[in-house]
Image (cartoon, rainbow over all chains, first blue to last red; front, side, top):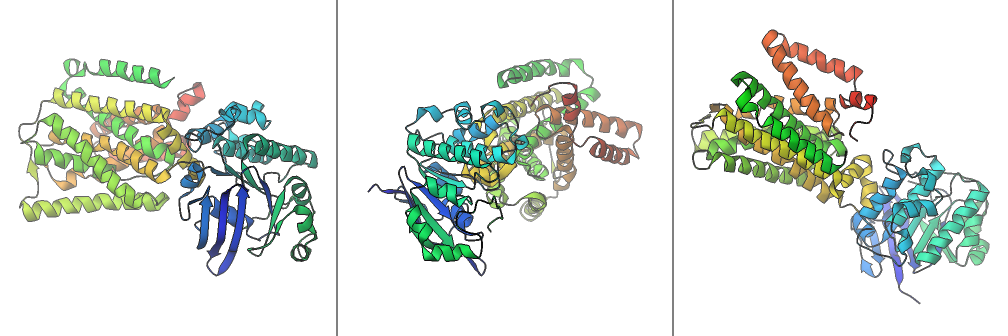
Length: 256
Length: 303
């Protein structure tokens, strides 16, 4: 089995008295597509903050390709190939879509060459995402759904080894959602990156990932084959108070 | 305009302006000198604060420090060397305070940079009184007006050229990203702390060097006159009114306001500050995007 590209070991993040992420272990290997699900407030986004260096964990370790980056600044994670999107798009609103992607290429993506030369310029990335026609448009003028796509473009511009996708499909129609999932699989297949994908549309997510981890109240309660996880008693229990497993509401309550 | 064209235009303007000492009267030359000085101050302020949206009030501190470098060294060093040293002291001081306070934002950063300027003023006053038993220093054998003018002109051209190069570089792009969303820029690989300190220090070279260059215009130097907070406030207002995110805005605005304030001071010596204040209020109310927004309305001004 190949070495984990990204590994969280017993990661804990506290906000005052609240334990948002509680001793979570999570791994993603080369070319692996991992789903991360859980009811609202389960700590998924907070875990992403820790995995990308945005929030330093209060306990636990973070390893990127075997290197311990615990406590490092976000740009160090980016330089080691961890790229992420934000649930609420954080594109540079005054810059064009193309400049947004170019920004990533100029910094995080500058030193690293990944296997796939097709993603070495901003226009190709935008074209791949179906944003080719919008490349000159100011990012702030794009619809929220397209800004989420642009977020993926920025992450790809960083030439990632690990891609963290936080609810990129929120607000998409089922057809668009399917296209988006295909896109993510292509990225994984063609670039061999490890992908961890958070999505509220659990059924679609489960049909595309090879493995799914479930967070509930900050703890990881399941991790494994999607079919097995869907039948897991603890997972069903966790979702019962919220919404059924497989509900596809585009709910977007922000986590922490 | 590409960066290359902008640099060529800057050089051409410089060549024309270099003729001023032979063509202008003493009065007009000193007016041109003050226009150049404020243009350089405003451009260098906007170099860092424009894209990042930081509000630095440290300009007076850099300027005052530079002036004191001249006051201390003019007897032993040539004028040009003192000016260079003033710039480097500005850089060193900015790097030091930048490392300490650039994590602060908004009003906190503004207040602390202002406070650090005041601290420097009092530190120098204390040093002078305690160790040198003096309240101020007399500048003897100052260079002539033409030499001062050319020195300030070179500094101004240097500030504009540096601003052009920064805007066209990765450093400039990183600064824009920091201004738009600092954390996002970090997650895209920008070492924001290093970039900010670097750019802040770079932008402090010019006020430091200008302080050193302009110090010889005073015959008597004391902390209160060279650490004049008014210089810093004027610089910030000029850059912001001109449009701090543009290259040309702060230059146009600095020249405009230097001329206007000189005109008001001569025609209405008693109410000039009042009129200047009203003018500023009117501009903020009716032209919040700065003078550059007027240019833009006419067509594509510089980006």
